[in-house]
Length: 342
Ligand code: ATP
Image (cartoon, rainbow, N blue to C red):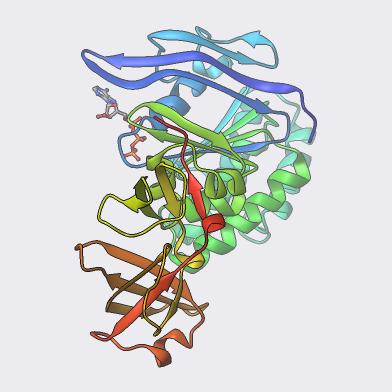
């Protein structure tokens, strides 16, 4: 990955009447980088992507692609390849014709089209399916054709709008690994929309976490998980216990050895035992739920003040504790991550 900025969103905003879909977004995507736009439904992910593609006109701000201002350029003239959630394949065209479409429209010579389509077909493991129509393909195969159609034109930036949402969980995981491999191999600059934090964590170089039209944090998967910038990011990425600390106590009376302010305590940092809670950073409660996760066990502890505290540990937690029984949660000062004041 180089550090050159391929795509720059500079104060990009979109309003619909009094609704702000996207509020002054600044984002730079480097060459060969995959950045996920992640956030809950309605946070402005799709609007952002569609402004880059040229389907939605920004109310404010600029879009630069390879240094060129494309803010008002018509969609079909932009050097972008888009994959839609619905795939939007041409139903009456074969797999090969679907992939070839963008090249034909650009007037690429026949022999070169054949060569580039064959390469895509092989990269995406669609061999033998070239003559089929979309309706004769599985969801996963259709998805790969849609990716091939976007990539074959070798766009400056690939735009993916929830491309795996129609796939079942297993296929979804396999396909995203494939996409990541392809994207890395071909060095594709990519903007990827998803509301699935696990998916964003799994395939991104950096994640742009959005909330209510705003970019709340931009960082690597580890940065957004380990050093969340806001309470929203802490709760949206992974699981988080949030404690507000003041003068050595949380708002609901848990004794804390921690600085004042809002603190994030990840469940895997909480250990459980059956000794009484003494001193700070320890609290006893009742086990409300034990869930076996495969990789471990998650416990929900109900505290006397009413709060639920999440803890995650080895599978053996399920043998050591029982639902309805007592448990004491403990952590250290270093397990608490302070959020910057908002
Ligand atoms: P989802 O994951 O549900 O697709 P999203 O994060 O992609 O959500 P957007 O589709 O970008 O969200 O929408 C952002 C906000 O803008 C929402 O509040 C939405 O209702 C509003 N919005 C989007 N398109 C329009 C429109 N054409 N007219 C009015 N409001 C709109």
